[in-house]
Each structure stands twice: as C-alpha cells, then as structure tokens.
Length: 353
Image 1 (cartoon, helix red, strand yellow):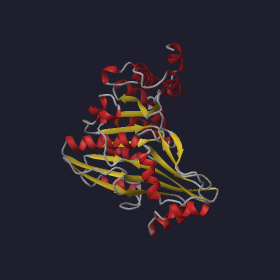
Image 2 (cartoon, one colour):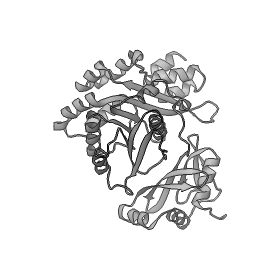
Image 3 (cartoon, helix red, strand yellow):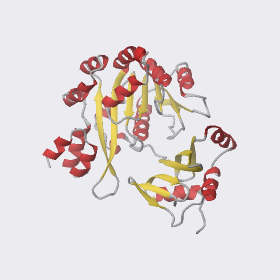
Image 4 (cartoon, helix red, strand yellow):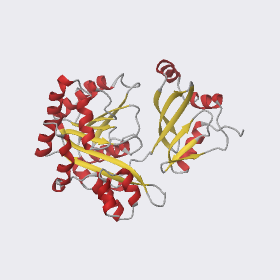
C-alpha cells in the first residue's frame, strides 16, 4: 500500500479536481465527489486503522469527547489557501468514517448561480419566513449564503445566524453579521433562537429547520416583524408546507398552519442537474411567492392546489420545477432524459420529445 496522505492533502486534491465532497471509508479508497460522481483519489483501500487515524487527527479534545458521547459529530475544518469544509464523522459497521463538504471561501453572486431575477426581490423583504429547500447536495447552503451576502451589502441592520457548523464566513458590510455556531457559541438551536430575539436582529438566519421547537420559534420570529431565512430538506414547495405542519401533533396543526400561512413569504426549492458534457451541473429551481390565494390554500390545507397556483403566478415571479427544467432543455443546458429524472409531470416532457 502506498503512503496515506493527511486529510488536508486529500481535501486539497478534492478541490483541485473540482470536487464538492471527500469521503473517507474503511476498506475503500479516499474518494471525491466530482460533478455528482465519485472519483477515487488513491489506488489503495484505507485500512480501519488508517481511516480512524486520518479522521481523529482533525479533532480537538472537545470534539473527540463529543464524538465519544454522541457517536457522531458535525464540525468545520479550515484549510489554508483552500477554504472551509463541513465535516461529518460517523460510525459504519463499528468503524469510524467521515465525509467533508467543500465550502468555497468566496460567496458567489446570486446571478452567477443561475437563479431567476425574482431572488433579488426576495432579498428586499423586511419580514416573514423565507425557505431555501432541496435534497442534500443541491446547493441550498450556497444559495442562502448568497442571499445573506446580498442583504448585508444593500441594507443597514443586524444579521444573526445560527449554524451547525458555521460554513460561509460573512464579512461585516452595511450590516453587522453575528455568526453563532451550535456547540461552540451556543448549546442548542432553540436556545440560540430565543436569545437571538434579544439581540436586536433585523434578519435571523437558521442553517436548518430540524425540529418542532426550532420551527415554532422561527415562525414566531417571522410573525413578529423579523426576516427569517432557513433551509429545509424537502424537494419542493408543497412538500415543504406539509413537512413544517406534520412535525407538530394533530391538536397543534391548525394553529401552525395558520401561522405558516401568515408568516411565510417565499419558498425557493432547487436541484442540481447534470449537464450533457458531464462538466458541472445546471441549477433547476421552483419559486413560490406568497399571495392571497396561496395563503388561503395553505390555511385550508389544500396542498394539492399549490402547484396550480404557482403555474398561474408568473406575474408574482413564480415558476415551477418543470418550467425551470423546460427552459434548461430548450437552452441546451440539460437533456430531455435528464429532465425526466427530475420533473414533476413526466407526460409534459415525453410529449415534447
């Protein structure tokens, strides 16, 4: 077996190959995810001992203790002249393994990501809840970072973020940005959010809505005049509404549905779709902008009507995932076959092929 590199070396190699993630697993070569596909960085397989040594060598004593207690750990690594990485350590069949997500030092401009112009208008909101949703690896964190950066450059105020872990670093611009990391600066998301309301915030940023308590505080903050921006692991706008409500017990769902209808201002859902040449991926999005019809629809839990209201909501800046995919096909950024893998209405794309 050839000599095992340091984790930082593998992280540098991942970025050099244009990769988004590094995976370290027992009995497998170190591998980078490049444009959605895994690529081995070595010809040899890591032994259990080598894999554990690589991973544990990145941790502080406090982080080792947390891993021992909880059996998993989220944390961040800074690599000089490369950038930050979000790490997750976990056990698999009794062996310690890890994955690392690359977070570019530079926060991209919204226009460069491929979003529709309506996103710029969302950045001008002063209150309410804005959700950025998608599956793991769909670019939610990058979109949210770009929104926060845009807000910090175009208005005066205080932005408080609650993250686990901190990913992008926001410089102070026209806004003062206070970034708080769960486990380092605060103990829990709910506790940090309650405290954030006492820190004179204009904007509250939540890296992920994970549980009932966090969702409840976020909705209350949005209702009481703050702009709350958060991510959610859901595929589209209707699923996002369902997920937020279904977290609560049945006796609370009517109240939460009403709160959500009042507080929510926009849902941006996104997916990264492979380009025909295999070099990178194109951004497909769905945007729901709250209007009277949608508020009524959500309040009455007629979730099945949301897509139809988005389809006729072009004047408000709305579009569906299928409309976005259709545009990407017509501009040659993705193939018809690729659109079929991600669309909501397969008949639409089969009919146009």
